[in-house]
Amino acid sequence: MTGTHAFTGRTLCDTACQLGEGPTYDPATDKAYWFDIRGRKLHELHLATMTKAVHDLPFLGSVLAVIDAERQLILSDQGLFVRTVADGRLAPFAKLEDKAANRSNDGRVHPSGTLWASTMGRSAEKHSGAIYHVAGERVTKLFSDITIPNSICFSPDGGTAYFTDTDVNRLMKVAVDPKTGLPTGAPEVLSDESGTPGGIDGSVCDADGLIWNARWGANAVDVYRPDGTKVARYDVPAAQASCTAFIGGKADRLLVTSAWQDLDDAARAADPEAGKTFELGIEVKGRFEPKFAL
Image 1: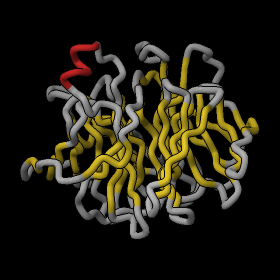
Image 2 (image 1 turned 90 degrees about the vertical axis):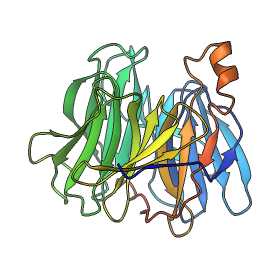
Image 3 (image 1 turned 180 degrees about the horizontal axis):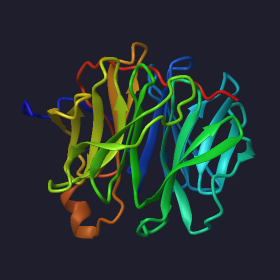
């Protein structure tokens, strides 16, 4: 690793989310979105004006994908829903599984327009979770027996998918069909972080194929090459950094969510920025998220 860089960014939103997660950006509207999973909230921030809106949800939402100008897809503990942007109306779309004890977690749209979506136990029960592939309304289970699925992202050419089980803490890669987003091989370890502090959490992959990973419990965003070499670490003000997203009209900025989940009063006092949402403050070569194809 080439070194650790001090935080030079800013706080984008000082609302402290219990479990800030699932950030994304819609370039058509210049709006960043993220969830407070435990708080059942969808946060919306217009970057040019810094105008903020918070939408109450009837479920534990964790992933948002743009469908078109009028509609978004939301992944939740109750399945997938289509959200109408104008009025926030939610229409059931598809179910992932029937485990009532599970909730949704990480996910991301593949360049083909399909979605990788994951589930886990509400109290991170061992091996309760899975990762699914969603093509329109067709749902296929890809990987099971996962405790905390995270780090789902894709190489720029759509030929490689990345993911992790944070409980195991090994960043994985698997070859996928660029046209469908379905695996064409078996997963293999890209980087074994099992003996190091902090957990591999949410990631995005930039235009050069670098993986930008939020490192839960380590006050950091780590950067990996496609060969698994860790090349940089960037400090963030909150210990439990949870996920990353490229934002801005050129996708050249990085948003980082965080959480105060599981922190007692003393720990929260020692981590006063926990749960806030940050901009890393450096220029990146990001990519806009693909739209979900119905």
